[in-house]
Image 1 (cartoon, one colour):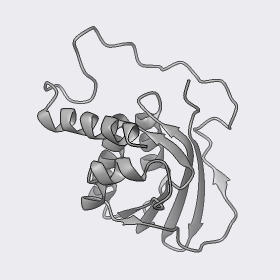
Image 2 (tube, helix red, strand yellow):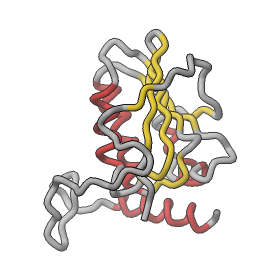
Image 3 (cartoon, rainbow, N blue to C red):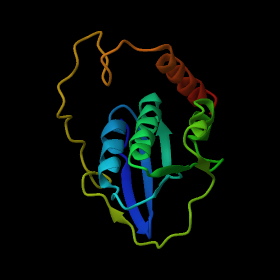
Length: 166
Protein backbone atom coordinates (compact mmCIF):
# COMPACT_ATOMS: atom_id res chain seq x y z
CA UNK A 1 0.00 0.00 0.00
CA UNK A 2 1.43 3.37 -0.94
CA UNK A 3 1.86 6.17 1.55
CA UNK A 4 -0.18 9.24 0.92
CA UNK A 5 1.86 12.18 -0.15
CA UNK A 6 2.36 15.05 2.24
CA UNK A 7 2.48 18.62 1.00
CA UNK A 8 4.18 21.54 2.75
CA UNK A 9 4.10 25.03 1.30
CA UNK A 10 6.21 28.10 1.84
CA UNK A 11 5.75 31.47 0.22
CA UNK A 12 8.38 34.09 -0.33
CA UNK A 13 7.33 37.12 -2.33
CA UNK A 14 5.91 35.96 -5.64
CA UNK A 15 7.28 32.39 -5.28
CA UNK A 16 5.35 29.48 -3.82
CA UNK A 17 7.53 26.51 -2.81
CA UNK A 18 5.66 23.22 -2.52
CA UNK A 19 7.46 20.21 -1.02
CA UNK A 20 5.90 16.82 -1.72
CA UNK A 21 7.03 13.79 0.26
CA UNK A 22 5.84 10.23 -0.08
CA UNK A 23 4.45 8.42 -3.09
CA UNK A 24 2.47 9.86 -5.99
CA UNK A 25 0.43 7.28 -7.81
CA UNK A 26 -2.98 6.69 -9.30
CA UNK A 27 -4.57 6.77 -5.85
CA UNK A 28 -3.57 10.35 -5.04
CA UNK A 29 -1.89 12.09 -7.99
CA UNK A 30 -4.92 13.81 -9.44
CA UNK A 31 -6.32 15.02 -6.11
CA UNK A 32 -2.88 16.24 -5.11
CA UNK A 33 -2.30 18.31 -8.24
CA UNK A 34 -5.89 19.62 -8.17
CA UNK A 35 -5.33 20.73 -4.57
CA UNK A 36 -2.07 22.42 -5.56
CA UNK A 37 -3.68 24.28 -8.44
CA UNK A 38 -6.34 25.65 -6.09
CA UNK A 39 -3.91 26.36 -3.23
CA UNK A 40 -1.64 28.63 -5.26
CA UNK A 41 -2.67 32.29 -4.90
CA UNK A 42 -3.28 34.25 -8.10
CA UNK A 43 -0.53 36.78 -7.29
CA UNK A 44 2.20 34.10 -7.26
CA UNK A 45 4.26 34.12 -10.46
CA UNK A 46 6.45 31.07 -9.80
CA UNK A 47 5.49 27.72 -8.31
CA UNK A 48 8.39 25.42 -7.40
CA UNK A 49 7.39 21.81 -6.71
CA UNK A 50 10.16 20.12 -4.75
CA UNK A 51 10.04 16.36 -5.34
CA UNK A 52 13.23 15.62 -3.37
CA UNK A 53 11.25 13.65 -0.77
CA UNK A 54 9.04 11.90 -3.31
CA UNK A 55 9.90 8.21 -3.37
CA UNK A 56 7.66 6.92 -6.15
CA UNK A 57 5.76 8.25 -9.16
CA UNK A 58 3.74 6.41 -11.75
CA UNK A 59 2.29 7.47 -15.09
CA UNK A 60 -0.77 8.98 -13.39
CA UNK A 61 1.52 11.24 -11.34
CA UNK A 62 3.50 12.30 -14.41
CA UNK A 63 0.26 13.04 -16.31
CA UNK A 64 -1.00 15.08 -13.34
CA UNK A 65 2.17 17.17 -13.34
CA UNK A 66 1.66 17.87 -17.04
CA UNK A 67 -1.93 18.98 -16.29
CA UNK A 68 -0.77 21.15 -13.38
CA UNK A 69 1.75 22.81 -15.65
CA UNK A 70 -0.95 23.65 -18.18
CA UNK A 71 -3.33 25.00 -15.51
CA UNK A 72 -0.65 27.26 -14.09
CA UNK A 73 0.43 28.38 -17.56
CA UNK A 74 -3.20 29.33 -18.30
CA UNK A 75 -3.08 31.49 -15.14
CA UNK A 76 0.23 33.03 -16.31
CA UNK A 77 2.19 31.30 -13.57
CA UNK A 78 5.42 29.41 -14.12
CA UNK A 79 6.11 25.93 -12.76
CA UNK A 80 9.50 24.44 -11.96
CA UNK A 81 10.26 21.03 -10.51
CA UNK A 82 13.09 20.09 -8.17
CA UNK A 83 14.35 16.55 -8.72
CA UNK A 84 17.92 15.93 -7.54
CA UNK A 85 19.95 13.40 -9.57
CA UNK A 86 20.10 10.90 -6.67
CA UNK A 87 16.34 10.67 -6.01
CA UNK A 88 14.49 7.44 -6.82
CA UNK A 89 12.18 9.23 -9.28
CA UNK A 90 14.87 10.91 -11.40
CA UNK A 91 14.93 8.10 -13.99
CA UNK A 92 11.17 8.38 -14.48
CA UNK A 93 11.40 12.15 -14.96
CA UNK A 94 14.13 11.71 -17.56
CA UNK A 95 12.51 8.81 -19.44
CA UNK A 96 9.15 10.57 -19.68
CA UNK A 97 10.87 13.76 -20.85
CA UNK A 98 8.96 15.77 -18.28
CA UNK A 99 11.82 18.28 -18.28
CA UNK A 100 11.03 19.24 -21.87
CA UNK A 101 7.72 20.70 -20.71
CA UNK A 102 8.48 21.69 -17.12
CA UNK A 103 11.95 22.99 -16.18
CA UNK A 104 13.67 20.63 -13.72
CA UNK A 105 16.21 21.92 -11.20
CA UNK A 106 18.55 19.87 -9.01
CA UNK A 107 17.92 21.88 -5.82
CA UNK A 108 15.20 24.04 -4.34
CA UNK A 109 15.62 27.80 -4.01
CA UNK A 110 16.50 29.16 -0.58
CA UNK A 111 13.27 30.34 1.00
CA UNK A 112 12.21 30.73 4.64
CA UNK A 113 11.77 27.39 6.42
CA UNK A 114 8.30 28.01 7.88
CA UNK A 115 6.22 25.38 6.05
CA UNK A 116 2.46 25.39 6.25
CA UNK A 117 0.82 22.04 5.60
CA UNK A 118 -1.97 22.29 3.08
CA UNK A 119 -5.16 21.47 4.97
CA UNK A 120 -6.81 19.46 2.17
CA UNK A 121 -4.28 16.67 2.51
CA UNK A 122 -4.10 14.31 5.49
CA UNK A 123 -1.12 14.36 7.85
CA UNK A 124 1.36 11.49 7.67
CA UNK A 125 -0.02 8.29 9.15
CA UNK A 126 -3.66 9.28 8.68
CA UNK A 127 -5.87 6.58 7.15
CA UNK A 128 -6.68 7.02 3.50
CA UNK A 129 -10.09 8.51 2.85
CA UNK A 130 -12.28 6.65 0.37
CA UNK A 131 -12.47 8.23 -3.04
CA UNK A 132 -15.65 10.29 -3.50
CA UNK A 133 -15.75 9.27 -7.16
CA UNK A 134 -17.61 6.13 -8.11
CA UNK A 135 -15.51 3.48 -9.85
CA UNK A 136 -15.62 3.51 -13.63
CA UNK A 137 -17.21 0.63 -15.51
CA UNK A 138 -14.78 -1.94 -16.87
CA UNK A 139 -13.15 -0.86 -20.11
CA UNK A 140 -13.43 2.90 -19.50
CA UNK A 141 -10.75 5.38 -18.56
CA UNK A 142 -10.81 8.49 -16.42
CA UNK A 143 -9.89 11.96 -17.58
CA UNK A 144 -10.89 12.50 -21.17
CA UNK A 145 -13.78 11.03 -23.08
CA UNK A 146 -11.52 9.72 -25.82
CA UNK A 147 -9.87 6.32 -25.86
CA UNK A 148 -6.33 5.91 -24.52
CA UNK A 149 -3.78 7.36 -26.87
CA UNK A 150 -0.44 5.99 -27.94
CA UNK A 151 1.22 8.75 -25.91
CA UNK A 152 -0.42 7.54 -22.71
CA UNK A 153 0.66 3.99 -23.47
CA UNK A 154 4.21 5.19 -24.15
CA UNK A 155 4.18 7.08 -20.86
CA UNK A 156 3.09 3.97 -18.95
CA UNK A 157 5.83 1.94 -20.64
CA UNK A 158 8.52 4.56 -19.87
CA UNK A 159 7.51 4.73 -16.21
CA UNK A 160 7.55 0.93 -15.92
CA UNK A 161 11.01 0.78 -17.53
CA UNK A 162 12.36 3.45 -15.20
CA UNK A 163 11.15 1.60 -12.13
CA UNK A 164 12.60 -1.70 -13.36
CA UNK A 165 15.99 -0.07 -14.02
CA UNK A 166 16.33 1.16 -10.41
